[in-house]
Amino acid sequence: MAAEVVGAAPGAGPGAPADGEGQLAEDRAAWAAGPLAAAQARGERREAFWTPSGLPILPCYTPLDVAPGRHRARVGLPGQPPYTRGLRANGYRGRPWSIRQYAGYGTGAETSRRFRFLLAEGQTGLSLAFDLPTQMGLDSDDARSRGEVGRLGVAVDTVDDLAGCFEGIPIGAVSTSMTINAPAAVLVAMYAVAAEAQGVEPAQLQGTVQNDVLKEYVARGTYIFPPRPSLRLAADLVCWCARSAPRFNPISVSGYHLREAGSTAVQEMAFALANACAYVDAVRERGLAVDDFAPRLSWIFNTHSHLFEEVAKFRALRRIWCALMRDRYGARDPASWQLRTHTQTGGSVLTAQEPLTNIVRAAYQALAAVLGGVQSLALSCYDEALGIPSEAAQLLAVRTQQVLLEETGAADTADPLAGSYVIEALTDQLEARALALLGEVEARGGAVACIESGWMQGEIQEEAVRAERELATGERRVVGLNVAVARGGGGAATSDFRVDPAIEPQQRARLRQARADRAAGPVTDALGRLEAAARDPGADLMPPILEAVRRRATVGEVCRVLALVFGRYRAPAVI
Image 1 (cartoon, rainbow, N blue to C red):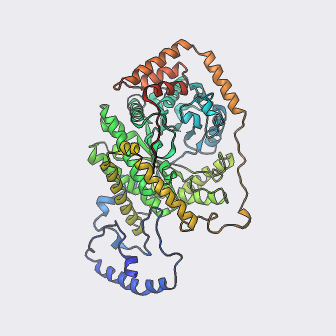
Image 2: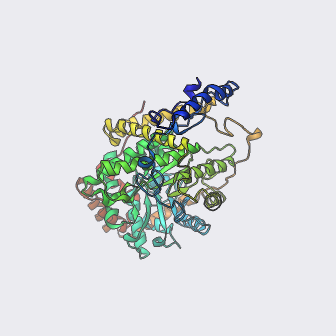
Image 3: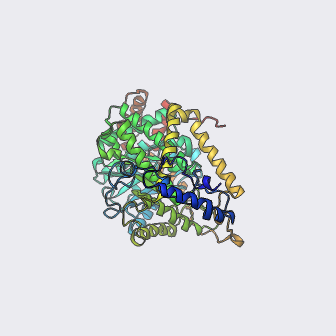
């Protein structure tokens, strides 16, 4: 029993002990049979210890659990391939991560006020949330939008609504991240037109658009068109940015939402990587060389509460992506090999019970992200399980990051946990398991085929069900939920922030006025040219989208024309 517990972790691949390790192997065997066996006989907190992804956690790690001779080729130094230890030689000492809290609600005016508050308190980048109708390509006066306008993010119908989010904020001086997917091309076009009104050319734009529509079919459900025409739209946006907005990241491949839907860390890694390969293939098919766009590909991943698994995840991801870009795609620019990622702490692991405990969760998750070497970070706020985060909760999220940066020492040296036996062993195991799952996706025809068949969705749903079962049985322990539950509920709901219900009728009135003020003929003509381009498989869709937006076509009007050609997606039944 003891020998099984302390043996090399599955997937670590240490092989035979190297010279000088024979004595260590003997010492560990004696320890397992003696002191460890006696301690285990006296009892342990639980029967077995595993990460949330199912990786076994040993009671002790030694060099025997790390593959011999691996350091130079597979770990190396910070700022050097394969980037296991981070993208910069000096870590955060020269350039800290970007503090980028997710915000946006109501109208552009309300969102602008919240942005200016966060910037004044030390936030270093903007992250824009759109309401559900905008994410679904619907206008605010669409019957399907009723009750959702401005609720989960800002309502954007026309370019003027988006411009309102940046009232008093110079677009050319800030980096803006936009969480939008199915209609991403439309919203980036609006952002470019809004910037032009401030005298900012597309080449000056800084920021990121998510534009990862493939994960919508798997995790979030804010899709409009079927996967293949959606992939075409995403690729056209990547190509436009490469040509016209080279400082703007045209896609942020998301593992975050896969994890929120219930995936393990391994599935988060593998499925996000599979989706990224689909985008790279689609853009290359349009004639763009990989080094012309790969340096501007970016990522967003989740961070949950198992500190060591999360740190190892980011290290393994960088190593896998470097190998994929260099060896599979033949990228020659080292910038193409670098996986640059934003991360947000887990929203799905926050509890409505004892909401103040979420402050502790988010802080430790943020620490894991920093120790893992991410480039940008946002914390899910402690009251987010109750509604739109309050101003006080968002301020605390910013302060948490500032404490991490200024007071803990976590940002003072690059990859501070490197060489830890447990970190290196978990990095190897996560890499091996993610690559195996990525291979299965490819054997099934790639990401799009796995989405169309419903296989990828089903795999994540199975894990989500397993996690819920473990919560119910207490096998997965969550403080305040099924362990250490406070008497009397453990604290009141702390967020009373609500969107003013008057915003919806006001937004609808604003939309009516916008339609009345514009010249109808040019809008109709521009939408007609967009439809013609959509019917031509070889046409680039960005120029007609930009023209339509400049003519004050709405998000809903543009998406309606595209849906006329592409159709609307209906999800397959997942058993």
